[in-house]
Amino acid sequence: MKKLFTNIFYLFLPIILGSLVGLLISNQIDYQSLIKPPLAPPKIFFPIAWTIIYLLMGISYFILKRNIRYTEKESIIYYLQLFFNLLWSIIFFILKWRLVAVLWIITLDLLVFYMIYLFYDKKPISAWLNIFYALWITFATYLSIGIYLLN
Figure 1 (spheres, helix red, strand yellow):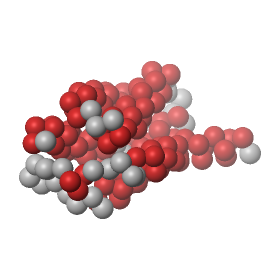
Figure 2: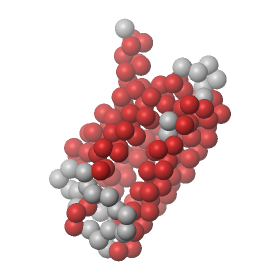
Figure 3: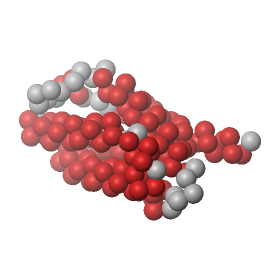
Figure 4: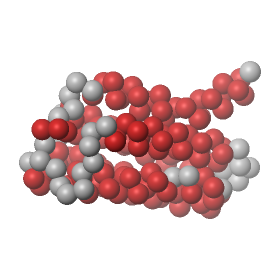
């Protein structure tokens, strides 16, 4: 029973935490009122994309944890990037510290790419499951910089 709970924890932790942050910031999101750079998607696109990303992130970590070559280094980077990911929304939407959010998301980019590198060394499928995340977070960096500069 403990193993089942642990597996569920690894699989769904990103979705649960992402949903909690989403609820926390939902009344503070000013995306519609901001001047956005070209290619900015509609607001409805974000929860869909993040749900998929968080699910893939949880699956990738679950698979990685089952690998005998797994070390604590991968866990540290995984949880650190998740922390940076979740806190970005608070910095950007609640605190409205747009420049800090830009610097924060650039750090997140580096952490995500490093996480993918580490995961690939231990379990390539765990890395590949995070490619959409890397692409999306790179696009989110473009949006963050664009919003900062335009507003």
